[in-house]
Amino acid sequence: MTTSIRPPVFSELALSRAEVDRLAELRGDFALMDSLLHDSTTRILAVLLAEAPVATHDANAALIFTPLSEFEEQTEFAFLGKDTDGIAYFAGFVGQSFASTSHVGQWKNLRAVGVELSARDAGLLVSAVALANWHSTHQRCPRCGVGTVIAEAGWTRKCPDDGSNHFPRTDPAIIVMVTDHQDRALLARQTRWQPGWLSVLAGFVEAGESAEAAVVREVGEESGVVVDPLTVEYLASQPWPFPNSLMMGYRARASAEYRSDEEIPLTVDGVEIAHAQWMSRAELLHACQSGEIHLPPKVSIAHRLIVDWLGEPLPLETSFR
Ligand SMILES: [Zn+2]
Image (cartoon, rainbow, N blue to C red; front, side, top):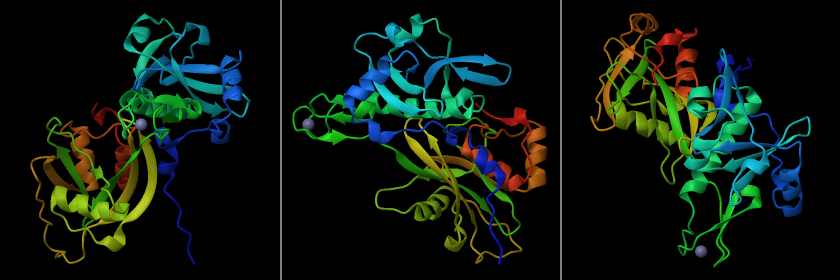
C-alpha cells in the first residue's frame, strides 16, 4: 500500500498560512470584546478594502498596527483572534481620508505583500481584507433594505427592523491544471490580459454545482477540452479576498478518448478567454526565460499549480502584475 503525499509547494500557499486562533466562540461576548479592544496590549490593524499599513525591509514585510485612540469615533472593528502569546488582534475599517492622513506606514495591497508577510501577518490581513470588502458592500438588509448594524465582533451584520442576521459571503471558485496525454499543461490568456500573460483555467462554482463538476464544465467552456472526471483531483485551497473568493486548486487530465497521436484541439470562447495553448515543461521554461510569456505571481494558487506541474521553481522575473 502506498501513501499519497501532498506536494510540498502546497504548504506554502501565501494566503493560507493563518496562525492566529480566531476564537469565534468569544465573538458574542460583547463585554469581553469591548475590554479586549481597549486592552493596551491589543493590536489593531487599520484596513481600507485590500490595503493596510505595512513596513517593508528587503524581501520581508510586517503589518504596522494603529493605536485605538487614532481611529475615528464611528469606526467599526472586527475581532481577528488571539496569538499564542495571548495578544488580541482587531481590524478597524477605515475610509480613504483616514488612509491619506495616517503616518503609520505605507499602505500596501495584500496581493503585493502577501508573500513577504509572516504567516501570522498574512493570515490577519487576509481576514481583515475579506471582512472589509464584505462590510463595504453589505450595508443594507437584503430582505427589507434597512441599514444594517455590525454585530458578533464584526462577523455579522444585523437588521434592526426584522432582526435577520447576515454573514460574510465567500464565493467558491475552482482553478485547475489540465494536462494532455503527453503531460503538457493547458495555459490560457484572459481577454482582459496583455499579450503573453498566461495562466491555468479558473471559474466560479455555480449555484447547486459541485466543485468537481465546475472543473469539468469550466474547462469545457473555456477551452473546448473534455476532462476525464475520474482524474479530477483536489490539491489545496486559498482564500482570495479580491473581493470574496475561495480558490480551490485541482489538477485534471484530458479525456483518454482523444487520440494519443494527435494534438487535442482547443476552442476558446473569445469572451473570457482570448487564447489557449498546450505547453511542455521545456517550452514553458524557454518562453519564460525569453520573456515571451508571463505567468501569475507567487502569491496566487495559479503560480503554485504551475510550479507543482513543472517540478521546479519558476524564474522570478516572469510574473505579471
Ligand atoms: Zn431587514
